[in-house]
Picture 1 (spheres, rainbow, N blue to C red):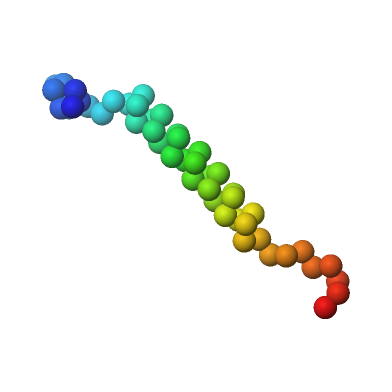
Picture 2: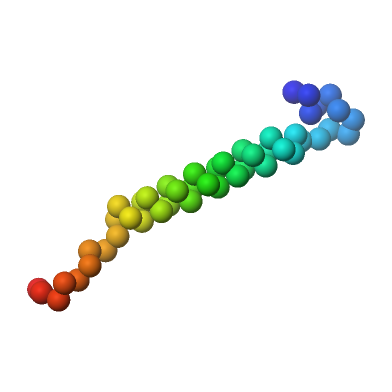
Length: 47
């Protein structure tokens, strides 16, 4: 709300970068977890 009162209108950069960093860190963690959960089974040589 305070961003709209400023002249010129500006985004709160530290808050935005913190939120973006948190989102990217969680996305990387989620992707890593998903890839581990659905990885291909290792082939042991027997059929």
